Length: 333
Image (tube, rainbow, N blue to C red):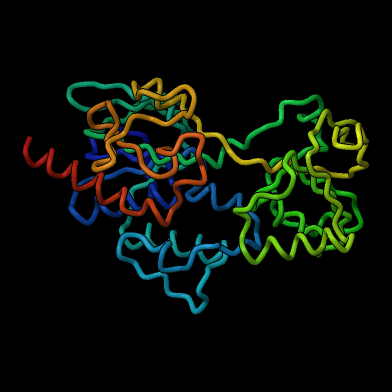
């Protein structure tokens, strides 16, 4: 299904090979437009970076795309099941893919676009009548910006807990990712301390997870440092400042899990207007078209910094809006 760099013009070039990008490509196929999905890594690279044992909060039917049933017996799929499902959608629609190919720039040309890329075979140029950006945000974890964060002690993604048995692990954050990671680490034999700058973990933590975590803290199984900020990461430890003053927390590993930031550089360079404070782009809610005609924005990148506002389940119709608008435009033209 992969395709080499070529100047052949497609109807819709989709930047991003996650569930949203696959959905847009499949919808284009359904109405006989020619799509191409360009992804800087493997297909579904963001899902492949999720925790290996993760179970989705959303039920399977709300993750369905392109009219392909998500047929599993469990109400909520695992990461592995989701990857297999979205791969099956790509196979069902025989999506043309350009994998391990990063988009460098998007420029208007002759009523369409020229997309400069760089991949395994070097630099390339692709041509399209329209472009849809579905790059998400999971590639860019938020950072604390304190000394020592780039040292080997600190990680910004949690994959699995088993290698931390018998270790002292500090988790920084107070949302779902941080709390779930702390629980998995503790259950797998790590001594866990959670550090959060607020007075308690976020009220948006999953309703079945939050009381379980709070009970573990209350009984002393997991240590928590609330109203506490990280000052620096040092050799085998984390220097923090909280209600009791400065403290050095011993640590064999640290997970900083405080959310993600959208990468707006590509959008800005293509001419999309971005709010400097919220990082929200100008986009037509009805069509998902940006202020640049023919350049569409789909999925979580519409939300700017508010990354908890748009998910797979409430942006599945972005693909239909984009493809229907483009089909009408091409037909009229």
